[in-house]
Length: 163
Image 1: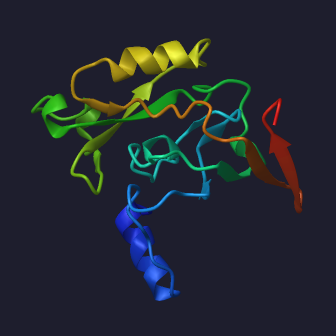
Image 2: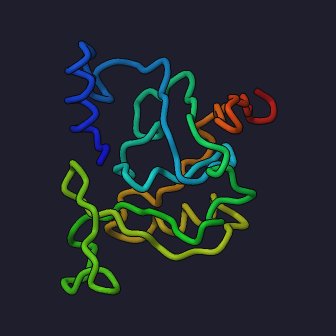
Image 3: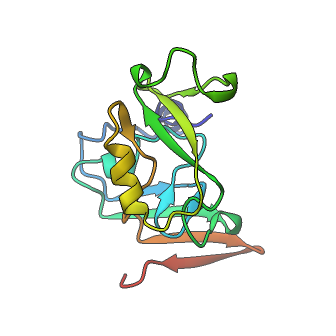
């Protein structure tokens, strides 16, 4: 499962050094996602709080690497939204259905929230982020200017309008 710690170990194996987000300005972030309409929901294997929005200052560019099936007409189209919450924000009984939440490198839980396609992702993000204990709603809005989309043996370069 990919997490910042696993990624750092793999980078070290090939001679790269992972840096802390506040250690150096980032020129580029390359990332994947579960759903993309050039806004994105994070991959189900990621720690939600680790995102381009978490870097300070923000990177000059973020490029998404995805397969064509990750493109959606609206975020929430696949019926789930991953959110990161502090452990105290989850009832002692655990998530619905008795499943075990993914624990991030920061020791927080990620929970999948059922959703329909989002008509106003920004309003949804504000509402979820306003809940005490939520670290991040898992909606990364306005962070990526382009996506490289693998489809049919080719790569399509999808760019945000105005870029």
